[in-house]
Length: 458
Image 1 (tube, rainbow, N blue to C red):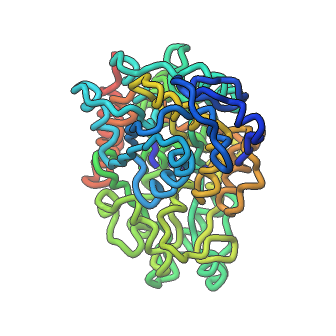
Image 2 (image 1 turned 30 degrees about the vertical axis):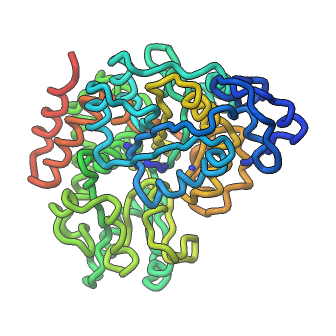
């Protein structure tokens, strides 16, 4: 998923003042990367507000937004549009929920849809489009998609029709660790899967209070999504992109030997009682530990590593030194099969509208621009955008730099989060439930795979 990808999940070009003062209507789409959503003429904005002239004419209106992003990440999200909101007078009323994936369909079906929703799963987007309640984006939002690679527009489309502009990208193929603890123990960052296994064994055999791995898959009604990431990492890193794509389309089923073998690799890794759940408990505690809390034992040296996305950066306590020589940092999860070059799993979020009111379209247009992406980068360490109009020098956080390099590496084997691309009933439903039972109850791989396959829409 995503959730947080995350993420993993992540460039402020000022409109010249003369041009901004010349823009007179909120419906103006004359800027190359902006445009409001309709409305009457408005007084010219000045100073720092001049660059928002194209979105003016809607002062005193409210736009509701619903997403799965929670504090502290949601705090920086709201900061990213604060100046826009203050200058235009459009109040964005944000609500984050751990139950977003289950509650959004309920709200939409009940006639209580938000104006905008940030949807992290293309499969859920397709479900919402099928409801007939999703509104196509305004033309300026469509035009702003020129700043993204075409594949991202595909992720925001259903049956070839574009519905939802991408907002973020996150790097999911990361392992968090403590550089200070590694240095003190004489450990080196593993470069291969064999190195990772050997390091895990070495830590486990050391006999101290530190276990190699910690983890948590709790996330409200989205409980289970981190486990889908673990399986996806192994499938991609074992077989490459072709098998991964066939798995997403169910040409390769969960019960296929390739996928059950990948599940066995996950079990040897994250269900190994000698390796997990450092500082928390036994294997079963992974199912009851929230993903937000899972990495905390790294800071007390009770756990050595956590596999989580780039957006996990927001979960470390204030004051944590994040960097190559700091309290925590991250490295890219190695491929299980060394013949698969640099497997990178990513996630993203897509802004979806359920209203075409002018103020809603103004917000849509702004949030699809490179300018907003730049503002988000500045206010949100741990957040990366695949928007090509973003000034990469804005990435000052070392995790963001690492993520951006991996996500833009042309030689990497990149794929979007598989469960997010699967039908919502599977990727945001049956798979979460079955993988949770796999961890919580020790359910067999065969039953777990069979339960997920049985949920696939006919």
